[in-house]
Amino acid sequence: MALKYLKDVTTLRLDTEKCTGCAKCGEVCPHGVYTYAAKKAHTTYRDRCIECGACALNCPEGAITVNAGVGCAAAVITGWITGQEPTCDCTGAGDACC
Image (cartoon, rainbow, N blue to C red):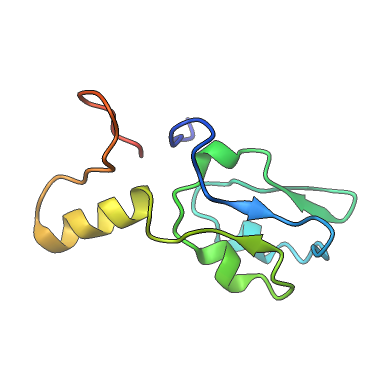
């Protein structure tokens, strides 16, 4: 079962006009956000995005933008560093984003 972030809140954007279909985004995405059709990447599973920024950093065409560090990835890493439970500032009790 793939984990999901909150519906329609990720900052991830893909400009398919710039995409050349190199598939690097899919290679580095830890949550399988991308699929490929007609030699282009597509964010078929956009709500799985944890905003880690790996896809944007590895896109040679600059077709991907994301505000890295604002989502669950930042919360998990901060939790590891501080030794505390990760919090994504989600609303409601028990709403773990990842």
